[in-house]
Length: 343
Ligand SMILES: NC(=O)c1ccc[n+]([C@@H]2O[C@H](COP(=O)([O-])OP(=O)(O)OC[C@H]3O[C@@H](n4cnc5c(N)ncnc54)[C@H](OP(=O)(O)O)[C@@H]3O)[C@@H](O)[C@H]2O)c1
Image (tube, rainbow, N blue to C red; front, side, top):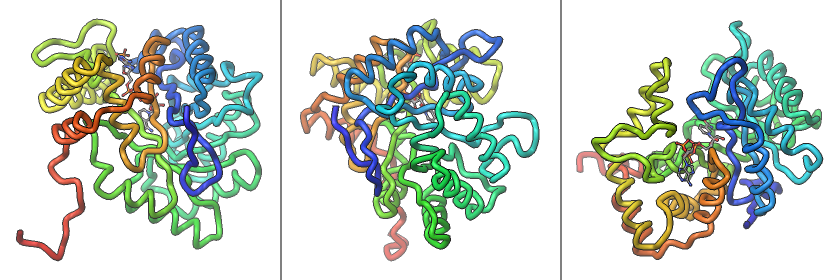
């Protein structure tokens, strides 16, 4: 597997990043809507990923109530230094007003919690999971800079920030002479291309590499769902649709819409022509998009991981890539050009 520099930093990350949102089961509950599974399979996935040359593993304090971080920590024990361990903070860790967000109060406790669960003395890439409107960005960047100076964090990044939020963050860090972000973790796939308009250009300009999440649209691009048919048992969409949380059900409905399923049909058709799986074709497409540093795959099984890694190595014939580009192109991929208003 190839390794490339993460943004304007010296850190080298593999072209595949192992996403672990599926890892671990929420204490006292069965598999979560993200498909929590047993630890033996998680350990096998980590082994195979590292053996294939992957080095970056992504988790978050919020995944399965902290269980994902615990499972990852145990899986990398004894080889910690060969892994770029990435985690995130923002989402609620308790009921209190300071148990969430990007304040100094919360981030300081959140980092200690992540270090404890991961069983390590430092995080390689510490990411803000989302923007926090209620905390001045200067406070967040100064807190993160302090983590880097203390040695508990090596590099910092953000996730799901808008272009303006990225610029504000970098300028806040620069004004204070502090540590800038080196990465963004945005959603990106043939079903979600909005970052192409402004976010990717801003990342390039401001020195952020990208680790892109949900490259298979949660499995929709893997050809497992068909128009007019209910999601099959055991699939993520079936689990989300059965969730008591309205947000989870809405997320599944948003993904399983007609235009997305049409794109998935094009992917399946291209895959049949190439003798590859639809998942491999969808990953091959995203991997080669300009501005993508690493693709965060989210396998639930070892077989899925192997298929995903094969996809990242697949070279799509230019006409296939162009066709997929065309059938998935969002209505507008460039910012409005004010000088041509009225056209
Ligand atoms: N920063 C953020 O806000 C954010 C948000 C979401 C995710 N993430 C990160 O990104 C990672 C990946 O996201 P994701 O899990 O949504 O990615 P994804 O690759 O779009 O979806 C993964 C799902 O696709 C299916 N799948 C995967 N490989 C397959 C294959 N080869 N063949 C058939 N089906 C396959 C599985 O669904 P089934 O379970 O149905 O088998 C799996 O659970 C997460 O683990 C997490 O680290 C970050």
